Length: 88
Image (cartoon, rainbow, N blue to C red):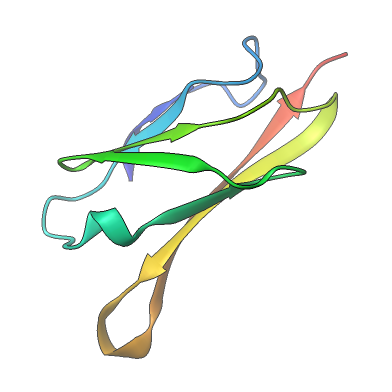
């Protein structure tokens, strides 16, 4: 993964505009699902090799995560997760 937004894991904007770029060799990006702490499954937009995650509400103060998964080759799974700190 590259070009993650936000780059700073201490959130200044909440909810964050979260996104990342996946290597173009990874197929079927439309099969990715992302989940946010306390919110469950989120809305995901796959734009070519770019993934944009849309959160429904802000995170509470403290630590929160966004985890993204998708089926990979040979019955395996691809996973990407980011933990954020949300100041009070």
